[in-house]
Length: 260
Image 1 (cartoon, rainbow, N blue to C red):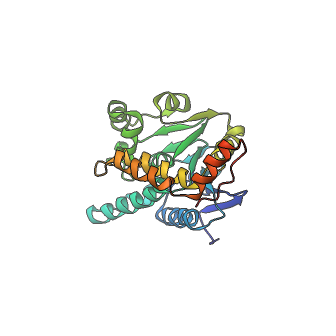
Image 2: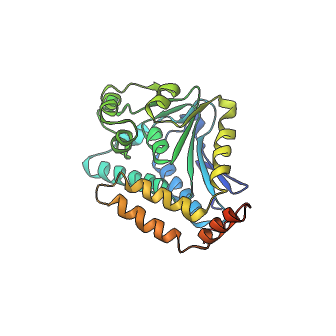
Image 3: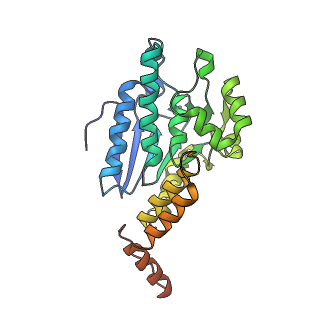
């Protein structure tokens, strides 16, 4: 694996844990860290030994407490557009990854941190987690996809409220709104993520990747989600995993999926 300055990568039993390692900055995302996240998620795509990934933050206070304000303060119209588009591209890579990606939210997930968590396929939060899109406090708006994903996850009215008031919400409210899948004690956070991933990675990898593709299509106005689903279903039925899965069911044994 590549060497990283702002990330810690740990591959264990097929699960790559990607830790944003800027605890002294509450793991704030600077441009260098965004570039490293792009490289790390590309490793998830390319490395056949990686079956799934977890994003988390170093320390116990923050997942990612926003973007690096010192960099944002210097943006102008031209550089701001490039800044936003690059972040959107990287987070879209996370969202489109054909392997399961979970955000282990261990504290503040604000601004770009909330956007990174929302780009993951699921979110598990510790009891002390706090979520928010407080960008209007700086005279800006979310730029890494937050206006779109927050609306998709919790609905237009509540998304409008959170982004316009800059209010933060706790883990339990986030779960009630549908922003978070599970809330656990901080010491149980990684274990819960690994428990979920162990269930998913025991299934047919091709089918898992196509579930991700189809669910993402549901929020893509330029794509017919039903046609995407039908095409994906047909693709599954041409796979060796389909033969193995149906055969194992009929033979009353555990399937041995190979992702082909």
